[in-house]
Image (cartoon, rainbow, N blue to C red; front, side, top):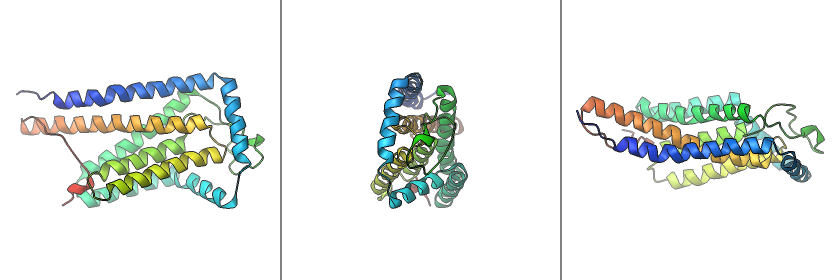
Length: 237
């Protein structure tokens, strides 16, 4: 049986640059962790931002902190996956969604352990809303999860007429989440920027691996070259 190498080539074209981006994020984190001067400059910026607090912004930032926490985030993932399953009536898109959210999110936690950058000095802030003593800062877990979750939503809604609206809304939510972590003083600006860059690369890598796996499985089952696989909600019947 002949083997179609096109899916493998497409996979390589995505994975190589994505892996390079992830490596660059890790190296950047290690450099920042070893740069007290840079960290001190970012801490000064956090203190300046901290003086601009208002009650409405406080409520929004704390609401985002709750929404993308581990417990609530797990419910979000399961609920969204269930919705995808109901919409498509196929397990594949739902599994794909769970994988592109959870694997990169776990990867972000591994990068935290590897980089080992300490959190900002929250007790030194004049306006403390969220006290998280100790812990690791790079990358931001809340921002990474929000980005991975919403990128997963973008993938499974591909092809819908309201897909551009989904993209615009998700971008706004991700940027708001990143800004809220800086606003609360629990992450440096470089933490949240790295989280977004990492999440885009990691989701692309996992999605490419899933697509290759489906193409390989389809080729083996049919004995024919696999066609590109698209698993958006638009294929629901």
